[in-house]
Length: 140
Length: 140
Length: 140
Image (cartoon, rainbow over all chains, first blue to last red; front, side):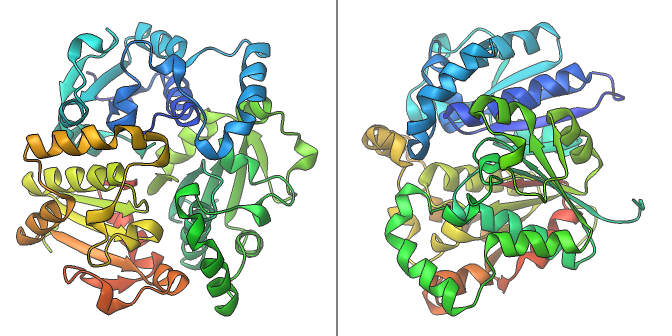
């Protein structure tokens, strides 16, 4: 990859819809600015890469009373779903998705159950190298 | 702003009192070191910028058994409230507060309900530019 | 410390087992790459530094239905416990552990109840200096 591109490194650790949107809105915005986006999914973030999982993500327990109105507003705004955002980032060629291998083993997640957009199954060393090279790295 | 100043970029995503204190204690400490602090509030963090909301923030559900003693200790320490910390950072001229516009739309939050210390209503691109330029960026 | 070493700065704010593993797996991996690791524990992360606390850490409330199978898999994998990971990082000489002094006061945590591997009791200014100097800083 060319060295003159900005790089954003994100760890997606959470499985709640607010954090997924945070990661994907930051990612999509970065992509629209021509930034390479590297997303490393671990723990409950990794679980969201299972087919059909993202669609079922909910708000954190503390905020489930807000969920219905939140969903209705997203619909009214015709806001893209998380998976729509992911696919559109992927089409740019600027998004790289990494699934955390220790998490897969800890939770018994299988490769064939992950969405096809996952690029690599890797461990933390790969993320640390990416983050060291990135302009901004965030743990979400 | 002068370029020789250190910059701290924070995303405030959470609405629980522990994370609010984390953001504001890091921010206040940075300000006391002469660092510019840029805080971007999104999701439940943004909701805490609504008038009167910060005062009602609670510990996460898992820890609500600790809440009473936590409150009593804060009182005994005469520890500043989150809003006190925010106002005192603002007085320094080093704090810039950004409210996330997509969140406002997703949750139906109105400008006139936000505290007056908010400087700008912006999207993720503004935060990414700030973070790229910052010495340290954290997602809280 | 030599200046040619990479540095990783982590804030450990959470007390759930997933986030503790995230911090310690990132930390252990960094140590194995010869990186200096600086961990600043605050709020529920700090509470995990109390003797015997880490062993009782649980998954977040939303995921407690996964806990039993998660524990069984960790056992089957003979995966090191968080405290094992911490001690092995400490043996490398590359791990520095900081306990947040305001948190200790806010929750009434005493020095003598912390694990002996804690290096220093400090405030946020120390962490900000470390993070400014680090190659990567994350809030976990």
